[in-house]
Amino acid sequence: MSVMPFRGGAAREAELLGAVLEVLRETGYDRLTVDAVVARARASKQTVYRRWPSKAELVVAAFVNAVSGGPAVPDTGSLRGDLLALMDVLLDELDELGDVIAGLLGELRRNAELAAAMEQHYIGARRRSLLAVFERARARGEVSPEADVELLWQAGPAIVFFRALVSGEPVDRALARRIVDRVVLPLL
Image (cartoon, rainbow, N blue to C red):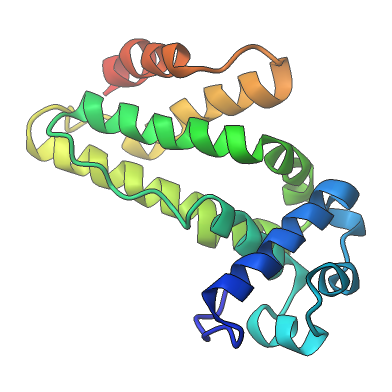
């Protein structure tokens, strides 16, 4: 995603990205077209393509915008507190965009451009946040030097997404605490 300022300003950009999510929810990724987005947002194709050169970049920009760009690295003073704060962010994102996430999951395997954009702008940001939390905790002595943080950063999101999007089991703050207390912390 480019950092070029949007001509209509931040409010107009948010409006256009909101239109992307509306069309995405109605059509799915495969059938989403820039034509449908610009018609919904009353914008020009040139405006969209100047900022987002591909459909994948446009969709990921809309997705990331809807989840406020990415999680800040929490600093509650404890590893458990930081992990719970990040799980809260994940649960909020799932509440807000679970339908969009479910729709994009299948596309990620089929569309390398979409997968790369999601990795760069969404997944990578979450990975960096969790690894920063783990490294700070390691410096405080809360994480074993042998802990495989490269693997463990995925544990919480994997369980949450599996339950929410595959098994249909409930996902709530109590589950987040169980994941942190019974899975992630013992393995760290």
